[in-house]
Image (cartoon, rainbow, N blue to C red; front, side, top):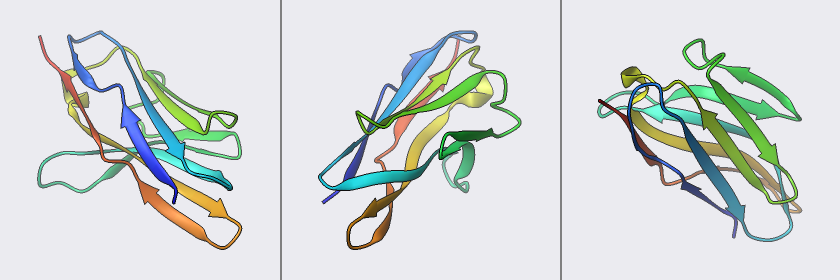
Length: 118
């Protein structure tokens, strides 16, 4: 069974940096696509950044400050977040399309809180 486990959230001051990690565990799978999303309380989950076959795309609010990457050898994705702003405060989730021998799965991590405050 493939699972996504996130880590790296926390509290930082404006202008600070965080790196979120999303590790996929299991056997006999590959990651076809992976995105980082954010969600506030009572709000919809919005895309922050996505990587598909090495190509990346960012929300306007993240472009130039955040970088998404995927280490296929480690089955781990990262979101490097620089120059953080108070508006970046939210719960961040990774979501991935996982391909196995039998099927294609869409999985979510458990979420990690990012708080930017002085």
